[in-house]
Amino acid sequence: MGRPKGTSTGSGSSASNTATTTLTTSKQEKTDTIPADVKLKEMLKELYKLIHDVQEERSRGEHNLTNITKTHERMQQEAKVSPYYKTKLKGLYNTAMQDAEMEAEMLKKTLDKIVEIKCFRETHNGARPKQIMRRGVLMSMLQQNALTLPLWIGKPGERPPPLCGAVPSEPNYVGKQSDKVAARVRAQDGEENWILAEIVSYNSNSNKYDVDDIDAEEGKERHTLSRRRIVPLPIWKANPETDPEALFQKDTLVLALYPQTTCFYRALVAEPPSKPSDDYSVLFEDTSYPEGYSPPLAVAQRYVIMCKEDKKK
Image 1 (cartoon, one colour):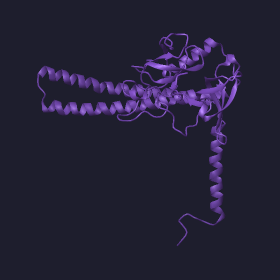
Image 2 (cartoon, rainbow, N blue to C red):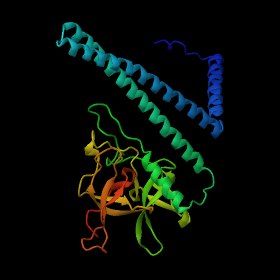
Image 3 (cartoon, rainbow, N blue to C red):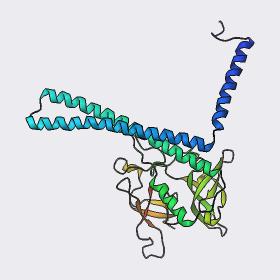
Image 4 (tube, rainbow, N blue to C red):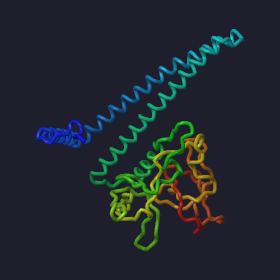
């Protein structure tokens, strides 16, 4: 059987392949050496264009919606639905559905770009020396992080993905640098606590993470922990109106970040969110109260995760 077309034993092919490889490597190195601030500006320009495109698409869709409204008004005036209006409305509604799908797709791309920019900033800020952060600033940052958590918007019939609301991560999930997680650490007195931490690195050989305590006032302690001592936080909010199954239900035992702290404690869900902007209402385990639980407290979806322990302490 003959040699495949384009295969050669001569040096010309080798030289060509070498030149191509060198050119590709050179382009990759050029991309990798782009300063972080320049790269960030490029990403912000891309975000600006995406937002502009979304607005243009929305304006175009509004024109079609106006035609639908006017057609219905004419039908009411004539007090009948003629074949002409049926055909016209069918076409207008089909166009409106296509416009809505296009706008939704563009909005997803825009949200993805925002997430990409946030991750880029966190990663590159993480390469710089950490500054001590006042507690008030830290609490505001955590609150803002929860408010800006993107809302999962799936297509009809599409199930929420892992790390959307209460949906757990996949078994082989590995967190990235700068990801926020709940980490079970052991204090000097031997007591174990779940703290809010940030991933520094992951060792695939030992299956262990290096994480930093997020609370700078405590001294930025670093911990080396196995995967079973790490629980990733949600990266999307679940929409109670479309995906209620992706939320922890009433009376579910969870770990929740106690307000104005960076520690997770066991709690019962008193009420799950009813709207995308709502928080959970939870009852923290607290022996100082006769019932054994605190009054209801609000905790954002970002900071409510599954509790692996079933029994009450």
